[in-house]
Length: 228
Image 1 (cartoon, one colour):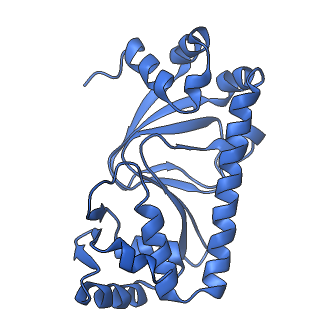
Image 2 (cartoon, rainbow, N blue to C red):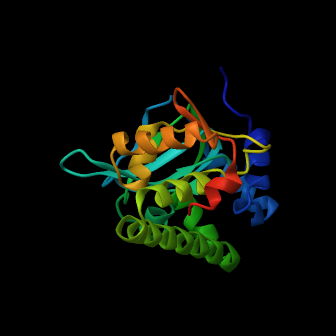
């Protein structure tokens, strides 16, 4: 299967909320150096500590940003979907990757190298400010995760996590189908799969959610919102 053409990549860059602020000539210059990569579900995109030579935008699929302790316990910082970017920390400081990135589903990613993008950013204060805003949002979220684990009980942490995931732009309608395993939810809220399953079963019996293999379907978001 052939990859995206020059015009395809130009359209991708042009409609991206961040990169679309570049001029037509700058986008054309980036198209030459950009590439599209495909990852099967479960594949590693990059590992924590690896050199950070690029920034990536999700074109299709879901990417998990996480870290694993020496004891094998994983914490999930974020789940990213279409239109979102990642790898921006290493892009800005030129350092190592600060977390692992894994394809949750089959993914298509637009990859831009640091050496080609940085010269353009130096002439675009507006894009730099947007990158700073993204970093601040993620820092706030990371701080909230720490506080939630310490101060909130499990039911509240789970309700908050599900509602945040349900805010993704690709989810619409009265029922919200989250392609999320119970293990992944446990890693997000900092608990065991067994404890998470117990709470999900309670919500399922109350009619707030439905459970399927690798998915949690929110039936009553308002009721779950009252538990946060």
